[in-house]
Image 1 (cartoon, rainbow, N blue to C red):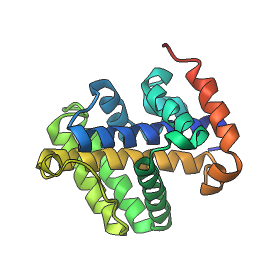
Image 2 (cartoon, helix red, strand yellow):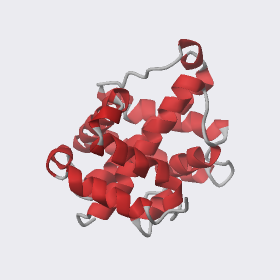
Image 3 (cartoon, rainbow, N blue to C red):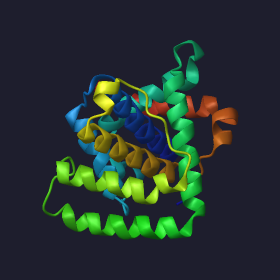
Image 4 (cartoon, one colour):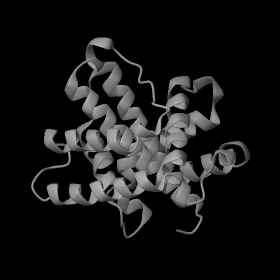
Length: 209
């Protein structure tokens, strides 16, 4: 994939949205159904016709992520430190995954098997969510540097919530892969901050209020 600022923003919006859903789940045990479905569906969309196709070919489905990018990068007084920790952690995990051929091969194998299951179940079905959680544990958690999830202890101790957390982290890693493929790196947050914000605003302006 050629380096593209537009693709970088779409990927970063998808990553941001996965993190925001994770925070809502961990803090309040709440998920917005349509955004949750779009985010999980992105995991199995490995050969999209376009970058936006990863997220249902609809900017409205990642508008929350676009707004989060703007808030996080433009106004330091509104920056969510916990969000930043998740973002840094996911990008670090993706870098480790990219360097580990065995885990990458296993991830591809398991996602191919997932495609067959999705012919019979919705991506938000408990069966699929449990499978996504297993894939994350098998292919990502084993790399080390596990991400600490913050939230309500009585919520996070629930098995179904733990599975959803891992599924959302897998979706975040998937977005991080797209980010890297489009030329994204840690240096972009330092040297291209204004360009990222401007691009996010440009795409957000195309969404439906």
